Length: 273
Image (cartoon, rainbow, N blue to C red):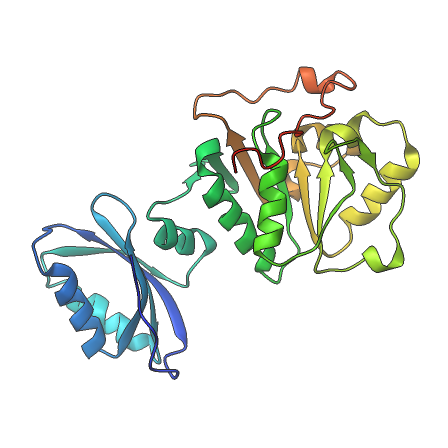
């Protein structure tokens, strides 16, 4: 991976460029870099993102310069341009970590991670928390897989304050109200959908309903249980994240529906993180 200081502040148009090495000959990367430089395009970050692909975050002062590069590359047999677009969170992570995060082919808002990819998940959530949009994020996963620690670590990464509205961390939490100073649209509000779904406390559920319409980031663990009880749908969520111990692990909810089974499920908070 290579990072370069941008010495051209006027080049403030940022784009993600991805190409495939058709003929991965020695010196190819240098030739591509030189061509970009000669066209007035700076390389901000570059990394291999698949076995035969490279991803670049580039900057220019005129998007036509990048179009010119794409046009010229049609006559270069060594590479094949795959993508040119405004960088998405997934693009930045691919360049940063050297691989794409897994995304469901049919439902594009579902992203999948395994326990050994928690570092990437934290980065992904941190980027979402930094965006100036009010997100509703659901996280599926079996107990003790790292859901809560990922949310909190991402909040720290994004320099965001987090508040548990419901939780099983250390002790079961069911907030009934918030203090005036706890209402802040820059906060991250964390809801354990299993706890909220199993409680009979109407004050807690009224607070949850209030916060669901509050313009801030909300992260719901066990979203499937949450929507069944709280009368929401998966369409209300902007992102659904699935976290597993390994790729073949099944996420089931039978035991979650038994009261108190889910208590203390994340007592291994940050264990091995």
